[in-house]
Image (cartoon, rainbow, N blue to C red; front, side):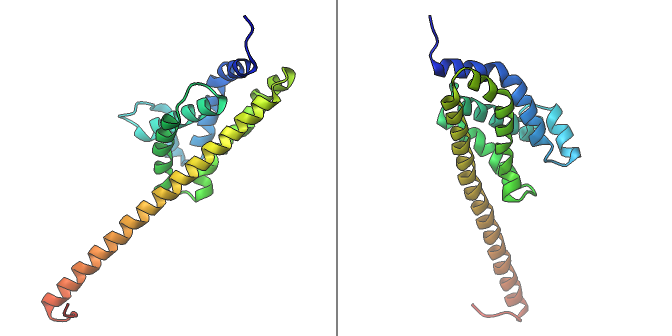
Amino acid sequence: MQMNKNEVFAGFCRSEQEQILAEWNEAVFATYPLSTAGFARTKEDQFRNPGGHAVHLALEETYKAVSGQASSEELLRSSLEMFVKLRAVQDFTPIQALGVIYLLKPLLRERILPACLQNGLLDDYLEAESRLDTAALLACDIYVASKKRVLEERIGEIKRQHTQLVRWAQKKGDGPSE
C-alpha cells in the first residue's frame, strides 16, 4: 500500500518530532532568566511546575498542528492560551512573548525541508509553515485579549483604591462630599 504525500510528510515530521521539540523547548527556555529556566526545564510535572508544563504542552500541540498530525483546533487554542497568558503577565515585550513561536521555523527548515525537497513535498512543507503562521496569529489574538484583561483588572484596582481614598478623606472631613 502506497502512502499519499500528506502521510509521507507527517511521517517525516513524526520522525523528527522528539528532536525538534527538545531543541524548540531549549530555545524557549533560553528566553527566561537562568533561575526560572533551570527549574522549568527540569520539572515537567503540571502540579509542581505549571508554567513549564504549559510551555511543553503548547509547543507539542503547536508542532502537531503545524505538521498536520491529529490535533484539534480547540486543543491547540487551549494549550496556546495557557502558554500565552503566562507570557503575557511576565516581563516580556510582545515580540519577546510571542516571537518564540517562530523559533520553530528554522528547526523545520533544518530538519524537515531537506527531506521534503528530496521527495517532492515542497507544497506540504509550505502548508506547514502557513499553519505555523496561523498558530502565531492565534497566539497574538490570545495575547492581546490577555493583556486587555490584565489592564482592565489594574484599572479596576485603581478605581477601588481611589474610592477608598475618597471615603477616607470624607471621614477626615478633608475630602469632596459625594
